Image 1 (spheres, rainbow, N blue to C red):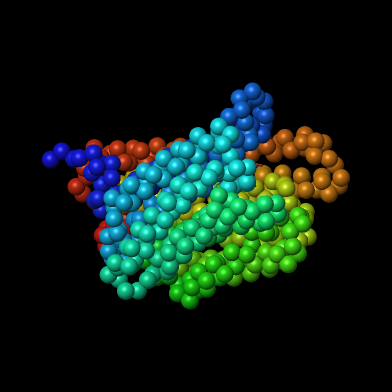
Image 2: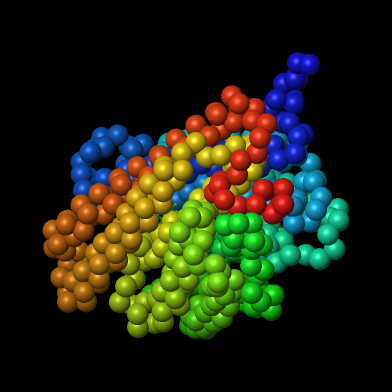
Length: 479
Ligand code: HEM
């Protein structure tokens, strides 16, 4: 039977949406991170794109930030949820067809991010640069993903809601509110009020979206990935109570911390104090989640030797815990005064988003793809190369950037002006560029491995189900 164009483009078959969202996410991950590497190169060769406005740093930067956040991380998180949620609530996704329609709409949106920003169509608000029609478009996309999530949960056959489901439902509400409050298209404010809304957006797109989607994914993955080599069941989540403290604490304290980005500005003192106190209190949900992840892996650390997705997810949550520890410290007035406007802050952003949640999403893709396509990864060696090249380059990238930030901070405190500090920074920007190139090389390897895996699955139309990492129970049993 010949498939209609509707069934080809927007299929209604089980898991088709998860496939579309996850594979698209990897494409946007490659694009968005390449923008990042391009900037790292521009810091060393600033004349490289001279005279080409659309390749100037000021246009590449927002294209990078918006692509990695809204296209790579968001699509990979939603794709993972579309795979995991139906299995947790024991009911199919409410509408695979609708999820595929939104998937294509989100892809078109992702394409319009660089098209608008590189052409200078920007609102000029850091991290929230997209213009009004894009804001409306994303609101519709978010509304539809939220509808699919809640409708699937409402139709569930499993009465108990596993902690991941709470996190994903919370993320849907959180991100919609953050999008409406943070983008001036919906609530136009001026001056300092606009800055407050802007930084609420910038921090909470991390706190009430990337973090909460990611933690839900970690809670799904850990019990699967701690299964023994000979098919022994995985560890259950160590403490349900700790996961709930994490959930409520996250939503209670994250909402108030945006203003810690503007402590050096004339916003009301009470708001600064509130933001600083909330930032310190964030330690409660962060450490209850991290301790829970640690304790849920206890007794199965040996799995790290052979289970590659577990390696990725463990590296990811450790980076998340470290970045949150750093974040709470950085909000304190004296420390904030010292490191504000330096590379320490940008390195910190990458500790959470790149070393943390991007790596958790690599783990999720390594886990989901073989189960979605009924095929083993094209090359297990390439997964190992991805892991080591990425993690070693990332650690170098972070340390060099942070050290550069200390040089900047100390120079400014000593009264050396910005222009004079630039020569001191050159060895650091050069080393950061090397780390960035090596990191993107590993991401290209990951994308190549995925492409070959999907192609081989399509070619073979595999009948036997071989799951990666090989010595674990069949997916049907652990899903
Ligand atoms: C190969 C990977 C990456 C490289 C080489 C890279 C590099 C860079 C560079 C050079 C900047 C400009 C910093 C400045 O203005 O001084 C930047 C900014 C930024 N990047 Fe990345 N990046 C990468 C991946 C990511 C990912 C995956 C995310 C998020 C998921 C991310 C989020 C951000 C954010 C939020 C900023 C703005 C930071 C701030 O406001 O200080 N990056 N990146």
